[in-house]
Image (cartoon, rainbow, N blue to C red; front, side, top):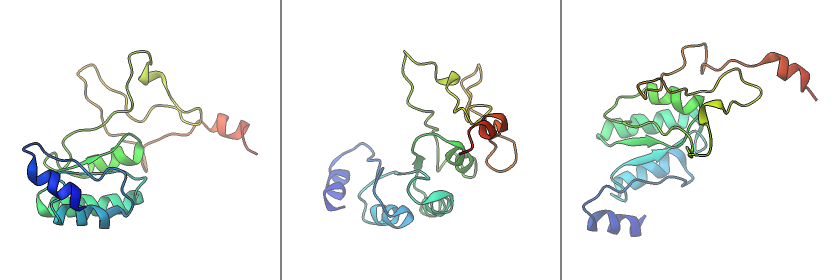
Length: 144
């Protein structure tokens, strides 16, 4: 963390990190307490839903922003569990001009996790659990 602490101290712009550092809550807390970053970044690949929720609680408690990396039903649910002061932005996939992001739905699901409305807003799914609905016809046809 020392090189990032020096970088964060030397620059006037906010340093966001760590993005892919293992250790879930613990590595993020270390970076924050060592002033190696000005904002945190995490997703459910690094600690699962519980680990990320704990990390968000930590960031909320010290008044530091934390951005959720990437997309997914679990990250979207966690985004809705915190305030805009902590998580200001939602990262909606790897958008590219040549790809219609809204038409990409995994074959085992009935709908994408984060459709955008005409005003550019993404709503948190309201269904049970994380809000996704399986295409049971596809699942049944692909049982091994």
